[in-house]
Length: 109
Image 1 (cartoon, rainbow, N blue to C red):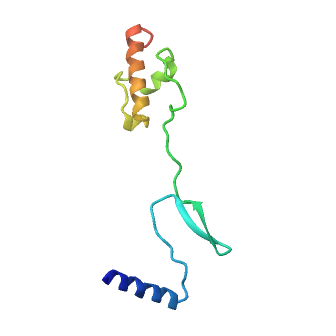
Image 2: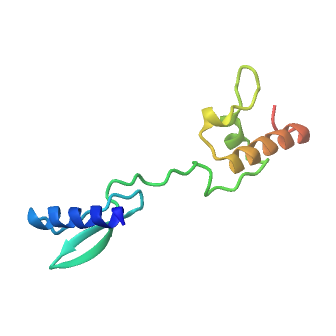
Image 3: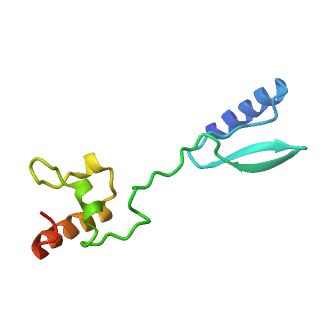
């Protein structure tokens, strides 16, 4: 009951000041814009493009030594971590498995 009275007061305040457009703030990607008296949903212009790793569109193979050598330290021979390579979890796992397989096959020094 108390909440209804508060809403009625808010309506009167907005209508009294001539502001009939109530904007809702939300974290969704749709913004509401008024066009010719009609409300139209548009995409969020401030949304950053989705980040993807550099290998998501590439197939990882143990025979591609040139690709695998970019993820191994030349001094120590250790595989770089995800925080250094910037790969997603799936591709980092594929890279590490391919490097280990290439070592086992003798293709990778």
